[in-house]
Image 1: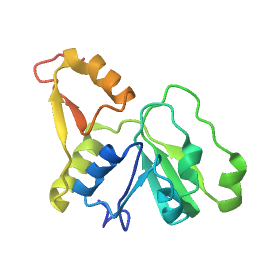
Image 2 (image 1 turned 45 degrees about the vertical axis):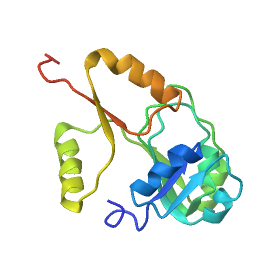
Image 3 (image 1 turned 180 degrees about the vertical axis):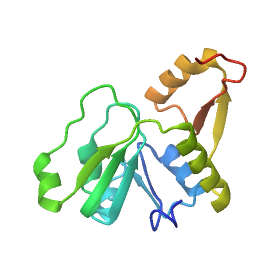
Length: 157
């Protein structure tokens, strides 16, 4: 996806241990908020940020990474209001937008794209009874992979 949609993959992380997982995704660089200097190195060189964080966090911390007319796309459904400076967006022509979960067709298109490009990610398949625990772990930043919910045999209608 990085070569087709964006030129390079940069990974933002809250810790060095989780940031190291970005190298497994062929990330060009890792930005660790707790390590001074990593943010400055990437300042105003990112055109798109795909924000997948599902808990409250400071968008302002990442806004400075955006180039002129850069975009942040939120796909992590944060329940609390997010805070950011409108003037920082306006002065540089930056924008924030969001997208909720796509349709089955859109999801399949993304999966097909990943297969076509040979992209991979670490996953953990979990049953329905583990969903609450999975969310608790994500909120605690105790996850180094994507959870995949196994709904086989479930009546979801």
